[in-house]
Each structure stands twice: as structure tokens, then as C-alpha cells.
Length: 112
Image (cartoon, rainbow, N blue to C red; front, top):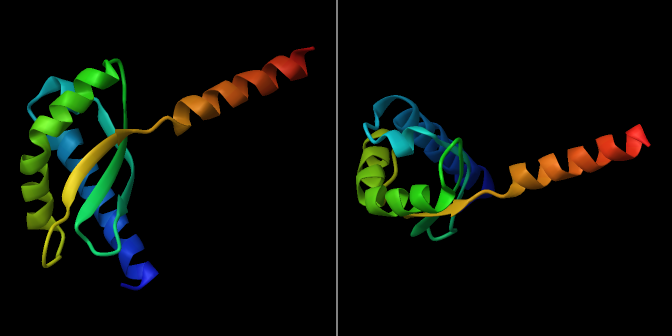
């Protein structure tokens, strides 16, 4: 598959999942989820969904996401035009925490 098509699919999945989490889920734990990226494999069989969450235990959120994966996959399949919707797997995105630590170190160095 061409890279721009895969990138478009990644963006479409991310957008739709954020809409679902932001406005449609009833589970309060999942309402805190923000999808930061999606990486669909070249054969379109799996989609790794990177997420962060606010004011929630990331392990609890990950457990809830795994339990809701088939529902979320079904909802995305209704909204994104694709022949076979990939299986969703979830991974906590540590890049935001990493960026905050770097920012704090830079601020600390500048204050010295």
C-alpha cells in the first residue's frame, strides 16, 4: 500500500477514535483517553493505537481499552471506508511525559 494512503488511514482512525472517546463513550474512565497516534501495519491487519489519559491510572485505562477493543473496532469500521478493519491494540504514549521531562531540564538549566 502506498504511504500516503496508509497515513490517511492512520489519521482517519485517530480522528474517529478521538470523537468516540470525546463524545460517545459512557465509561468515565475511557472519557479521559486522548489518541495521540495510530500506526496501521502495511497489510492492514493490525492498528497500534497510542494514547494518553488524564487523571486516570494508565493500567486501568489500558485494561478498559482492551475490553472495549471490539466495540471500538466496530464503531471505526462504520466511519472509515476500508474493506477489512484492522484489529486494534493499545499502547500508552510516553512521548508526552518524555517531552515534559526535557522541558523541565531545559528550564532548570536556564535558571542556573
